[in-house]
Amino acid sequence: MSKKITVLICDDHALFREGVKTILNSQPEFEVVAEAEDGKEGVDLAIRLQPDVVLMDISMPVLKGFDATRRIKKARPDVKVLILSVYDDEDLVARCLDAGASGYVLKDSPPPQLIYAIQAVSRGQQYMSPRVLTTVVRQFIANPTEPKTGYDLLSDREREILVLLAEGVALKDIARRLNLSAKTVEAHKYNLMRKLNLHDRAELIRYAIRKRLVEA
Image (cartoon, rainbow, N blue to C red; front, side, top):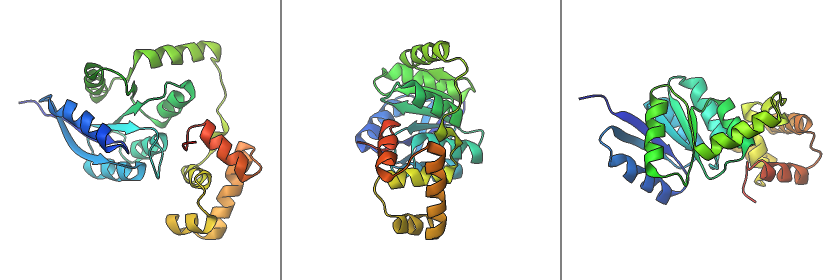
């Protein structure tokens, strides 16, 4: 009997996780080894369990999907990450692929497409939903040498603090949550706002919403 493809499901909606798990459990070749409801938990489980494939939502609490993907790939390069998202925005797709994702599947895709995508990335191939692929190709044709954005220049810690600031968390609470000093958090805030050319918290919040780092 061939080895099963082990899968970790990372999504903050329990009903969606249950639906995906039901689909995968109906296929004898898959084994769902764990579930995560936020990005940090997803990273921790992926590093500890080393599943073949991680199914990763973008809009995750604590740590966004593309940042979680980057951390997983840095710690466990052999683990494949397949993004599951409702968004077909080319900027988000590019950000996920840049983070090391092996594929991108829209949540309204039919189950057979998801099954095929998991099989493909587990073999070391890449997969994108047809609608996403069309969007990416169209964007590449329009901007074949598009430069990196300010967000690409941020460190993992700066991205983490950016999201927390946009969610309205106070500096002292961010420091406590991340086990940093208040001065260190202040320095990270200054650096990320300089890189993004933002001047106050209102601009920062608008930026985070526009980039879908937080919900409006």
